Image 1 (spheres, protein in one colour):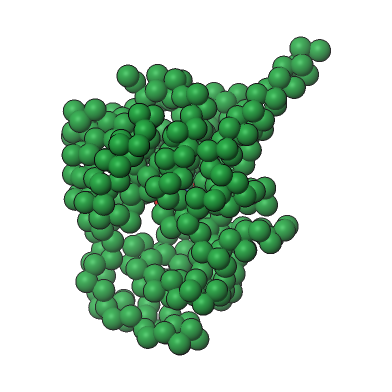
Image 2: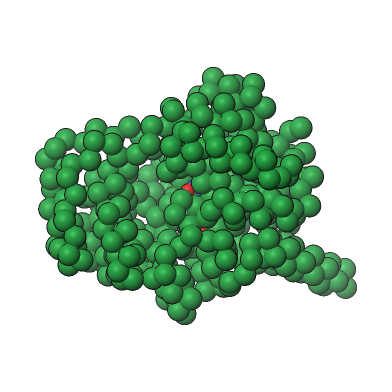
Length: 357
Ligand SMILES: Cc1cc2nc3c(=O)[nH]c(=O)nc-3n(C[C@H](O)[C@H](O)[C@H](O)COP(=O)(O)O)c2cc1C
């Protein structure tokens, strides 16, 4: 079955976004079982863990699901660069009473080994973010029976994925929470809103488009489908779900966000990501372009963020969330997608009544 046919056959065309640090196996399972498509966040997982999670999903449901990998570049920073970055972080670690970490030997899981594990595990769908595969890598996934989704933040990135043989495009608009997936142009050229991006990519490539960014309820789902999307991918809307694995200070920040804006920051990880503003982001804003590129800074701040979460201190936690965060509500993930789908049906009926007046 083509990816388009698989998406068309979904009872509810909602994909739960893979979210390292926030989604969970239980969330993906609940969403797939409720008629949407759950997504395992494989980005930080060891190859064996990816294989066993896919096997566990298969054992628990016949419904389709996806796995996501982050295409982190192999990092080989020089020791002086790591020293400078650690020196900048030293006061923050000290404030929490934590020892400054030693120079890590590894900065991110090895992508090639993760990809080999996905080929062996052969999930129904796999999506990729931060980079692009070769045609040979896509052929290997197709031979295993897996459909390939490429994340694009611009029309050029969508065209590039179409050229190497991807089956679908996840169009990640500017509104999206978490990391930006851009990989061709610099950040300023990769900040198209979901409404324009979904429509532009749909016109540019003959592939199903999955719209992501700022979709928080059924009205957003209906709007994205009206723009021609085959499905939507929602992340921030799941952050308060029962199955979310967000830490207590992060959850509280989401619940109390009020009218506060989210911002893009490079300070936590060395790659631009959207989150609720906090002291770490504000204090490092002036030097955020100088911190080592992802995944180096991500690795160097990992222990700091973990310690801050443990200490219930939101000042140094990466509070990833999208522009729609003020609309996030608690609930059970499977119930949430069913309620959103009912809302989408109501929204489209109301729209139908309006346009045919
Ligand atoms: C907390 C968080 C973590 C995320 N982690 C990932 C990830 O591991 N892989 C990925 O492809 N996208 C990740 N994303 C981005 C989502 O795939 C998606 O683009 C985004 O959530 C859509 O926008 P929304 O948050 O407004 O729904 C993450 C988003 C959030 C909010």
